[in-house]
Length: 206
Image (cartoon, rainbow, N blue to C red):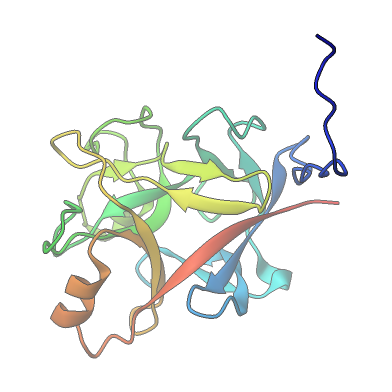
């Protein structure tokens, strides 16, 4: 029998954003309405954590891979404030860092050393907040980049190796961006912080 003839026009495939060099900046948007708030800043806040600022003082970054199907990767800070801890990683929060439903677990984004993908938080990797006497564990290989949208998402690994749902948030009272598990639990625990969810987006250099 002859092959069945398909009808209808071909639907064009969406194109990936250019990740050929993997260099760019990380844009911060409010999750509730998509409003652009700024860019991850090239200087820390007062507690050695990353916050956001303007394009003029944006952190330049290098993706650990330009293959968006490669899984989680590291993001290296090029003009960051701490060359000894060059990765934009996550440091366990002071009130807890197990991201389980109903549990207070969050992290600060800061400079970190290297940790393997899909591994529990490391006390030996080192991070920028340690210089202030804070010795929580850290993870660096936590990021994925969607080549269609540029969305940068994080995946925290719990101490027991489980990988719970992970969101990104901003705490204006303390001025830091971080990863979080149960955001509602954070808001209930710290109702006066004014925290809200954000999304991150990789903006490639042109």
